[in-house]
Structure formats: C-alpha cells, structure tokens
Length: 63
Image: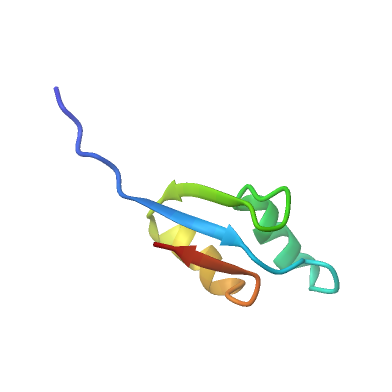
C-alpha cells in the first residue's frame, strides 16, 4: 500500500535566541535547532506552522 508523500518545509534559524523569553527558546529547541544559520526540514503541519508563527523574528522559511 502506497502512502501519500508528506509535504516538507525547510526552516532556517537566522537570529539568536539570547535575550528572548523562555517560551521562545523552547520553541526554537522544539523545532530542532542547535546552532545559528542551521536549516532543518520538518513536515508541513499546522503545529509546525504555529511554532514558526510564534517566532517569526528568529526563523525564516527557505524555499
């Protein structure tokens, strides 16, 4: 049985989480970022989109 291909989204961690609220730091960690300018690939789900929406000043979506 074939499963539908999950859509992926690429996110880049562009600004440091230093001097941001603890909740923002936890969102950055939850997305899987460990260092600045890192690009991670996640499934394009509403929960991931919501996490990105919480920290738009720290990350950007890469096409």
